[in-house]
Structure formats: structure tokens, C-alpha cells
Image (cartoon, rainbow, N blue to C red; front, side, top):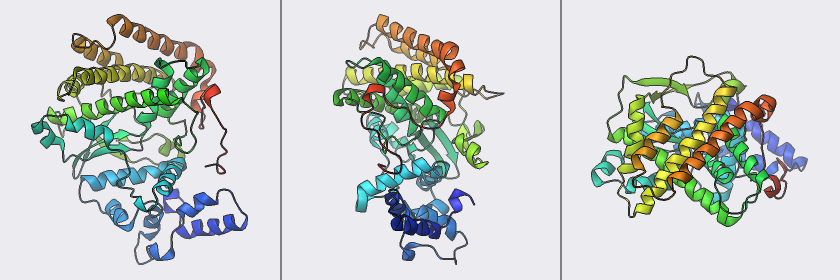
Length: 404
């Protein structure tokens, strides 16, 4: 029986056994169990499926998932169905639910800070164009944001995994003080494995280490800017009328669900022309009305770092999973890097040209080291599913199903 079809009664029996045996995992089962009066009965032909969603959704949300009538409903449906792909993600959601208690709402608990901040910087006429487009985070491991075509109009999604990818890449490459070399190397590996879908997406349950507060804040602030840029890039496609209905492609949201469950649902994405990608990159930077030049420069820096990090990841991904007759929807990351840097360097003074080139050389050398020297002899490190920790910054070791 597939995970999505498992009966709630089975969870209740598991809970009873766990309580009787004083199982340390009882907290997890308690979160999943529901009162019998909350359940759909057998009169509903899809009762079994709907009852599964009741572990983290209310009945109104479940009905919206099964009978979407607008873009917001469809985004909710994608967010909920993504939990079928990973027990870990399901546990993360249940932990969030426990934390918020009576304030919990699956629909409303996703972060909105980054895209709200970007939209509020847009000129009024642009704001009116995009304010009703459903957009937000979703559980998918894609290394970019996407505009998806639905029966209810377009929606914009960005993977929650990207926040972790950016955070650990920033920690691994940027100089925010004294960061041990083993912490930096582990951090880079966590970032790459996150996008390869082999790092467990349970950072909230099992922190990879204790990062000093000032360093943590700086890594987070830049990661937030990088997310803002990605949202801005997808919004730019709307503002520039790049959305041609004849220019679409079918793609899955994740790779692991096919490997684990033998099935994969494709979704429709817009397949933009590569020259439009360059235009959208620059529009994402130029369209907002910034309060200061420094705000603009930080967004440019976020874009530049994103392209360099993406170049490393794509090189690793293409080595491990060589693309076969794949359709290239975006220019190469370094092409996007040069396009943005050459177009903005006259107004970009946060770092000197020499410093930017040094960073480019450093990431290029690291990419070549991975491809030539590390991956060929350590392929299991990239393919095994599990968790990597931050070397000497790991902190207290936590036991799965006991401490979280």
C-alpha cells in the first residue's frame, strides 16, 4: 500500500503499541493521530487519502487540496502532495505544527518575508500586475525558482531547499570571521548534497551544528537576499510578458519520488528562451525602487553569488547524473554571472573587481577539484542518503526518533 493511502487507523494502532512499550518515538505518533470524529467516513470514496492529510491540514484545507478552484488552492495542493515524497519532510511539518499549537495553519505557515519584501519595492504599476499571482515556497529540490502553468493561471514557486543551499554555501565560502576549515568543507558538502536530494531535509529537527550567532545572522541575511533575487527573476518574466503558452515543458518536482515509489507526476513549466533569462536577471535588479544604493548592491551581490554557487552544483550534478538529450532552459550559470556583472559593475562598489575575480577563481578551482579529485573517489558520499555535520562545530549529537 502506498504511503499516501495508509489508513489513519493503522497510525492509531501504532500509537497504542508505542505507548504500551514506552517507545521514545511516541511523540511523533501522537502528532499524527487524530480524533475519530475528525476523520472522513467511508461514505466519501477518497476518505482514506483525505484522512492522511488531516495529520497536518484542517478539513477546509483538505477540500481545497482535492477540489482546487484557484491558484492559491493549487499551490496548497502542491505543497501538501510534496510530503508524499519524504517521511522526513512530513516529520518537519508535524514538528512545526507542534511548535505553533493552536496557531497552526498549513496554508499560512510558509515564509512570505522574501517575496513580500521584493514586491513592496516594485513601482505601483508593477505591483498591481503581480500582487494576485500566487507565489511562495514549496518542498522541491530544484536549484531555481519556477513559474508553473496551471488551470487557474500561473503560480511562482521557489524550493525551501534553496534556503539551506544558500546558507551552507555562504558559510562555506564567505569570510565572516574565524571559521575552521573542516566546518567550511562540511558546509559546502551539505549544500551540494541538499540539492542532490541526498541530504535529509530535516535541518529544523536535527541542526547540523552550532554556528556562532553573528556568523549565522550574516549567512542568513545573504541567503534571504538570494531568495529575493530568485523571486524577482520569476516576477520579471511576468512583467516582461515572457509567458508564452506555446513555450512550455513537462517536468517533475522531485527526482526521489520516482526512485522511491516508482511514479512521478509531471507539472507544466514555462520554458523561457535563454536570451529572456538574461533580460529577467537584469530586470529583477533594475525594476525595484530601492531606498539606498547599498540595498541595490546587496541584491547584485546575492545574484553574483547565486550564479557561482549554481555553477558548482550543476557541474557536480552533471557529473553524477549526466544529462541525456535534456532541454536547456537556462543559460550556463557563468554566462548569467558575466551578464549581470558586466551590466552592473559601474554601479557596484561593494567589492572591487579584483575581489570579485578572486572569488570567481576560488569557486572555479573548487569545482574543478570536486570533479577531478574528489567525486571520482568518494562517489558514495554524494549518493548516500543521510546527514553531514559541521565538523568541530557539530555540537551535541542527537538520536533520530529519540531526541527528535
